[in-house]
Amino acid sequence: ARRDNDGYYWITGRIDDVLCTSGHRIGTAEVESALVAHNVVTEAAVVGVPHRVKGEGICCFVTLIYSVEPSPQIEQELVKQVRHVIGAFASPDVIVFVSGLPKTRSGKIMRRILRKVAHGESSSIGDVSTLAEPAVVPEIIEKTAKALLGKAL
Image (tube, rainbow, N blue to C red; front, side):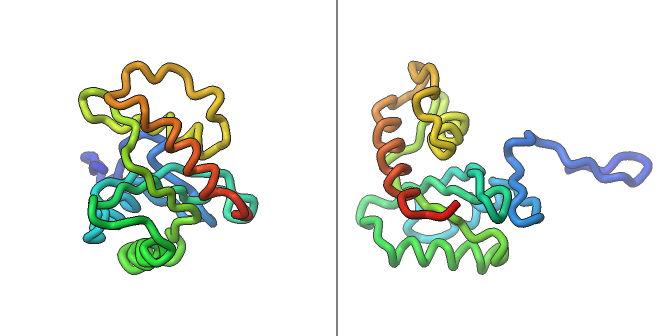
């Protein structure tokens, strides 16, 4: 954000980096920061997912430190973490534990891939040849499908 000479504030950034969940606008970076603040999380990426009540739900892709296995308890802790740091409106609707995130060779997370997977459009992901580790994509697709199973979004 920046303030111009007339005192107006301008919010900068990409439109896909802002979620609107239950009428609240929130940056994906805020949720990611809240998740990474937990001592067992190494990385996190957040994307919006269609939600029939909220309009847009919060889908989190999380990698944990090597000594920690994903569990319902860890998932509950992460939801509590986000609620504590940001507020109840930012509670994640889906948390997908993965071994790695889809990154370019320069380390940038390819959120378009995560967004497509979260929206159930994995068949139209497109070119993944620029990823540092393309092998993470099938795992992300599989684990996202399992995480979404039974969720009323």
